[in-house]
Length: 391
Ligand code: NIG
Ligand code: FE
Image (tube, rainbow, N blue to C red; front, side, top):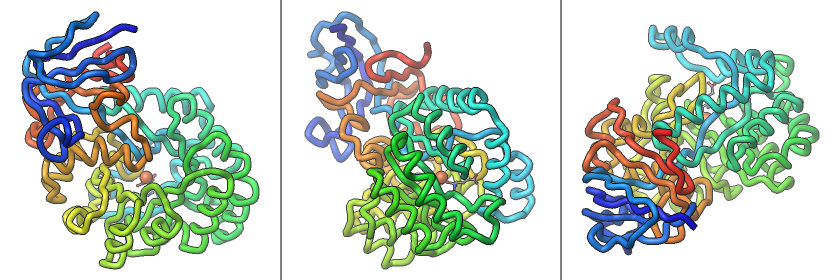
């Protein structure tokens, strides 16, 4: 099988403390060898074994590919005018989702697939090598079914966001919508998804409705994840913990009992600062979560309403500047943290046996991701051992 040696790595992030310094397992003057799609060797550049292909990184930093554990890519249209109005003072509300539901229902399968492809290509150029993708802009059985099927053409990490917001034909009848989701939508869509998600929020779904949706998903073999505590304090975090969710995402408006519940659980808190940036929301209290021992992931939450970015480097910069995460914590959260949120052990680290997903920076250290915000630092991206950017 073909081997590739990446040598002269200025700073290498392995995310394995046994391979280097600190939680990031940092090494200098390092090399990594891929065999086909797998990492087979990590060590000093001077000791690198011979390989079929050699890539001299000339002192650049190398990191595990970013693991994007939260995105909404199956949609049509955009909401640039809603964004402009928001910047002029109009508050964000869950109802804006209905604009995208209408556009998505009107789009063809080919148009939706092209949108996913476009945004995934953008994600790769930003360094993401694993991307979760949610449905949620159909909110009929047929539109959710085609959304998860389209997502499944591009990723194994498909999430059925069955209950995003009650669609217009169910206005004032959220309970009836939930009954339809439980009895018809989940049984039809579950074979095409790995995860079940719900937006537990004022103006979307309450605790009881969210519980019903997640429980039905679990009964059909899906693993829960929750949009919770984004816009208001609410029951999402504790519901996620109670049901053993892989993650609860947003986690902005929380109280101490939420933090305590997360700290005593396996549920990852996935923080999405791009959404808080674009909605002028508060940023999550990352320090309180981390200091309590909660596992934190960072996601970009690409969607046309609250966070139309695919850039985890941008989110890392926000997490460091606005949420007081250290650069090391932010880089870990966007790589190993995302992998934890997706319950994946094959991605998020550059260790022997891991998938050969890596990002080289036009910079000597991962610190530059936060230190040089807005600068296109991603120079090369390998996924499964193949160079996918530039290509
Ligand atoms: O993650 N919070 C709910 N869902 C998306 C927003 C969707 C939209 O506004 O279109 C989010 O922020
Ligand atoms: Fe989201």
